[in-house]
Image 1 (cartoon, rainbow, N blue to C red):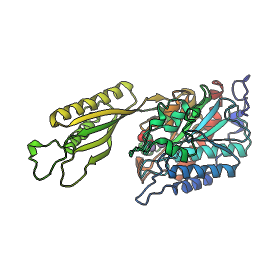
Image 2 (cartoon, helix red, strand yellow):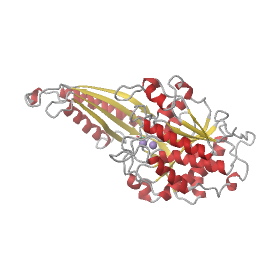
Image 3 (cartoon, rainbow, N blue to C red):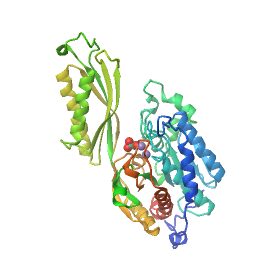
Length: 436
Ligand code: GLV
Ligand code: MN
Ligand code: MN
């Protein structure tokens, strides 16, 4: 049971000072990151550990084993999320301080995106357990399932399920049309009980997530800790371009409805929208599938995904509108039918000022310089932000590389970040207790 000091509404005097010397075990953290990186290691480079795949399941099993060894209790919820708590705590018992991230990756992704935040959360929980630290608001660690949406195309699957915002979850499927329910059963989840994965309103007192920056700012400025003030919103459009498959040698150029050429025009327009036109912060065509994909046949259909991002909701709306209007223009000019459907919309969010202060206080305790900055990447935190206050900590990414095999962070920075997470958990007690 979490020990709730409701009268005091926060930690007793001297709580932070009493634990100022507490540190995570850096060698253990780095070893576990290395072990986890072996699961889903892709012979073609990087890590392919897609959400709800056998590889993500193996990663969750690895986490369960290390928790058992550490004397921590685990539970897999109906959505496939792994929840970890101290044995004396029932996570349903009271609002908790939730801390975590995800362990799935994109295709040929890196070893730290998400995995770092989960391994660090478990490390923090283990250190609190080993030192028998009494928290006024108990901590629960989480490894959210399928954050990336690379296989089952519902990004933030696990955090949405836990926060009650997974609408029509069972309609999700992979690109070959295999339903999510088949994957979920293998992941230890339960399609029949999916709705039960949602926590009751108010069950999360606060949420903290530690993550690599995935961009170049911290490294360029030589600052070890980022205090995240907001996370971008994102809209994903699935676009189908339908032309006519025809003989590449006999069909006159003027008579063609070439879906590949129309798709190429859309791709260039998408690029323009976020560069010359500056409609929104980023616009990316990341996925493309051509049919019949044959050298001597004009392309009949192309499916592509376009995503637009911005911290300003109005610019996000304008970005989507601009992509749709370019689709209409290309359709009229090429004679190809172009249909765009929004498959995901996530809102931009702000982190909670008291949790930013807790992160700054933690960095100050550890003598680490920090920078307040936005996140251009999406995170489970932005889903949790719809139901609870959130805080996020960044550490530098070498050369800003992420979602690619070269993703890396200096070991010392990884250890610093996990210590900042530990002291943020302690420092966030007052903010969290106010919600209890
Ligand atoms: C999440 O990984 C994102 O695409 O930002
Ligand atoms: Mn990612
Ligand atoms: Mn991530």
